Amino acid sequence: MDRIARATEEIGRRLRNARNGSGRTLADVAAKSGVSEGFLSKLERGQVAASIANLIQLADALGLGLHELFADPNTPAKTRVAVHRAEHDELEEIEATGYRWRPLGGGAPLDRMEVFHLVFPREKGMEAMVSHPGQEHCYVLSGEVLFFVGDEQVRLKAGDGIFIDSQQPHRAENAGRGKAHVLMTVAKPAEAPDARDWWHLSLKTPTTETA
Image (tube, rainbow, N blue to C red; front, side, top):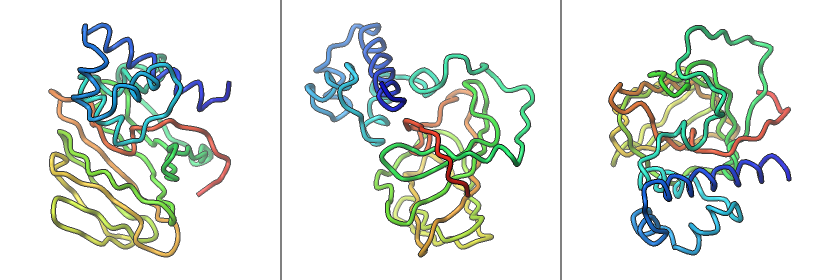
């Protein structure tokens, strides 16, 4: 079994355990999350992979924190000190989207801040609008990014940035001819420590391609 298949199976197991633990039926969770009962059943058995939009909906329907669904169980609850070295430049692919990322700091279950380097592919885009408690900042290192916030569109070039209240529906996509590199910072409120954002809802696979 390869890495992606194992991750798909593990996510399905955690979804099933969360649903059974809450005493809810497949039909109930499927209806609330907007997926079919048959699809949810296959997902829980690790037979299919969910889209990012579906994972957002399922996490909300089950009241799951992202660390409960996606994080390595060995991840510390809160970061005390973490140093990112330039030589640790391996990027991870966000399955089914073409995006790549590398964490730079934060991201443990009890951390209120997360910083990472995100690479937008030219040929693919993320269509789902998401919203969640907290704030975030996007700083374009190279390329161009089109940021959607509610009904507004903001085009960002290298050196530009945008800071938003994350409760507003938002998404971002590549707007240039090549890849776009972005520094993302996400801040989460203490009362809602998990930001259900699209770049964090992923099955991750290592890639040797560098920035």
